[in-house]
Image (cartoon, rainbow, N blue to C red; front, side):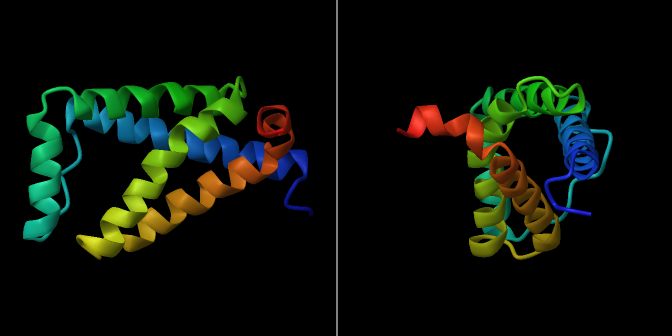
Length: 127
């Protein structure tokens, strides 16, 4: 089965979408315990939380993009919207707190895959 077959793409879209919806729901309702980060990681997350809007904005974006993926509407846009957040999650775990790096790796790999699958949608913009 090809990496670009419709079944593979659709399955990974739904998984990535549900993962983002789960992250968003947890951002709004905090039903999962947060991981224990080191001092640098906690300082960064505390600064984001103290803005008063950043976690709400991040959670809202994850929710919208997750719904786009699950319902297969505007998936190329969802992949682009999530790219900076996916990259930041990876960089957070590489430079501030290595704990949980594997989750960051899964998120960035799924996001890169979604960008790659939808690369034809970006060609008019990149001409």
